[in-house]
Length: 470
Image (cartoon, rainbow, N blue to C red):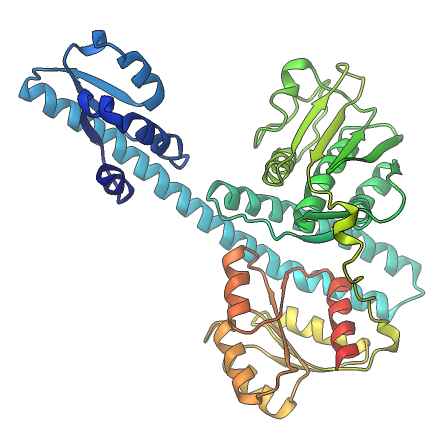
């Protein structure tokens, strides 16, 4: 319909006569209104014959929401006043939209700036452990730093995910993944929290291979956020039950703690973004209040649901996630099994070019990779990277995106064109983690995308696989 096309181009308000609604426009218009972005509430002014008394208009108002009824004949001054009022309200909505956009850009930039210093801190701890492998005191200090870096990284990631969700930029990267791998990674992420609180987690899951069709990162993030919540709100050392069951095409995950519990009204609010439990007896638990909200969003994006139950204050909580993502056995039995991970110890060494305008980050990464036996070159801007690659002939380029003279995409294209080698592997190693950056990296010929501060085990596994294939 022409009216819906015009609305899609942007509108301050909609004036419409009630006869048009009776002629079949109501249903598509109601659908358009229902599908508006969260910031939008289109003002609709309906010219009616009998105002509120017009037959059926109560139903119209319920379906269209932000409606003003104007009874015909309408005086000119009344019409102009109503239009101005509607446009003022609409302008305010556009201002809110712009504020949200600026907020999202700020959070993305903040995440990038915070990740940059975290990367050399994490790498430095790895280097120290390598330099003093038997020094118990050094190892204890580096473990503290690594735990805090991991915690800060999770806070940054959660903040950025909130911004991406509200702006509709989060998409699932679905793939086949083993249930056991998701569970193991969840517990691994939460292990520092478990150790610090002196809790233990009792995991119960199906025997054998159960394959899932989902986004592994988002599944792990959802479960880890719920498990971390159980750890945080259980004060005395205890056992947290982590039970996974398969029911048809569903997996049902139950995480039960013996912590502070929740009252009935809190159970309905606990998954709202930025909601925190009311501290009791002066207790302050900290956190941003977004972990469970993200778990709910990612679970629902997979077509699942999540809810919490509790017998009240002091009686703990149980969180139940239901996800319809199990691949039936007959669909994956015939699939080729995944290639085993390359043995890093037996892999040949690589020539690696590290490109990063953060000198500390580049130098610490170079030192760590050299300790692993690789030959490493560094460059601090795009032009220097292109020149270095010409004589270094690297097998692998670890490329930052935000370089001072040109972006990493351009530098990567130039290096690949210059070397002309199909087996050259370029890895984006950047503080930017959102989906459009990943897409642009792939279009620039980068085979992998790792977000700072990179998990060094993941980086080493990538390098081992590259070395094995070389």
